[in-house]
Length: 175
Image (cartoon, rainbow, N blue to C red; front, side, top):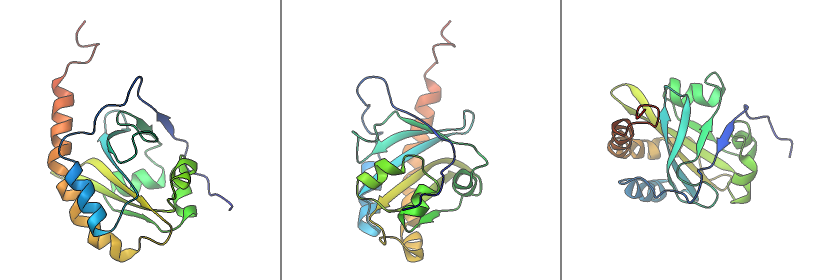
């Protein structure tokens, strides 16, 4: 397959063992799987100040551990659509996955060739994104409508994650 080029993306993994999934997101994963299916499901918290997506929940901790981060240019199509314009992204085939995610070989190795990404929005600002991936042909425009309520279920857990993170002083603040 000729693969479209995803934007330059810095993907980091946590040092040491991965952290546990953030509280309150297991029911979000269960509902996503019930409504539209998701072989791979992750929840990413959006850190607008740093321009980073931090993984706070994963169905596949070996490949996508909690604490890992993704940084891609804000002006790239996917961040513009999902994080800035707060619109879902639907990728129905492997080429549309590879066009937006630099880690598409890992995604493909997990048997995923379609993606549905939903912004998680609170008080008009993007606080995260849900990433649902499954086999090619799994998602269509109807999937977007069926999955839309799932993003609302992630608001409270993501707000709690953000609040806990800002309540903990960074090493620089402790000096």
